[in-house]
Length: 185
Image 1 (tube, rainbow, N blue to C red):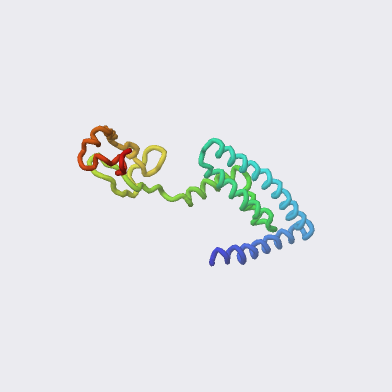
Image 2: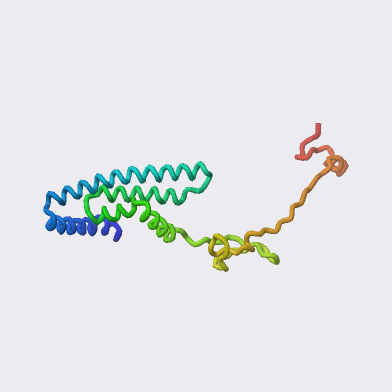
């Protein structure tokens, strides 16, 4: 509820106060012209940056790379475009920050850091023990925080079992049945 109160009550009141101050300083016709020009420039920027974000998204997919950053960039362009098309100077400033590439990259990194949970290791194989759940808080080395280089090594033993059909026939009472238990023909 507080987020809705902020979005639908506080932000419009702040916008009206800022528009009133700018109108007192520039006059009403110039303030309205500035809001109109701001919305038109915002629409052009959103179209250009949205096309760039779409191309980056398609390039990531064609390179078989996870497009997480490209999706975040596109979402920021979308939100920024909605804010730029909303009349007001405060929402236009925030929308412009979400649409322009340098500030959008910073916002994307901040959002990713805020929204990405810490990695959790579900299982760790130890030399002397089996598998047990761990929290991922041990030493950080390599590309992933909370992950040891030793965890990248998995000791396995491959066992190959080959059966000779002749041995199955001489096995005893089930000699008349095939590998699946059915009669041989």
